[in-house]
Length: 154
Ligand SMILES: [Zn+2]
Image (cartoon, rainbow, N blue to C red; front, side):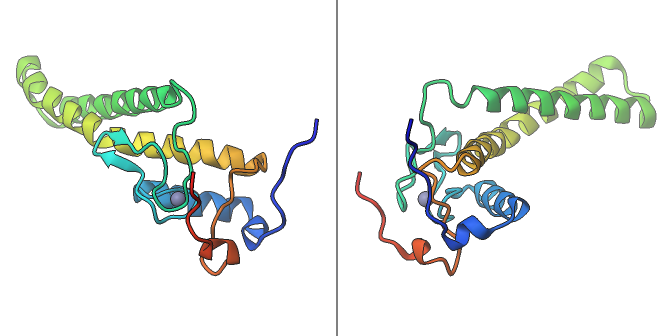
């Protein structure tokens, strides 16, 4: 089976670490991993369907963001465990007081972290596509001629 692959563009000469830093830096700033220009989110907790600059589709399949929920839950549990340790070591709070203060803090952390978890999931998904040299994954790097292309109509 023939697969279309990327031609060797300057982006293809980035090291794996350089590509990873570029894409993850972009998504953690809530920007498109491919171009770094388009917004990743339509609202605080809702991904845009696609990049409004380069056209990259962020969520290509139903359930594609399920993993980000697991990551968010796991990180939130680690954060909660860290808080429990802090309370046990440095306070003599009753369990009721610790829970009445701790639960809102953990919930706030979870809501604040969720968009970053979703963004990191999009970035990881995209990096997998770049690594597999999928034809739609055309990483745009500052100074790269591909980066100056007009946005694609779709
Ligand atoms: Zn883009």
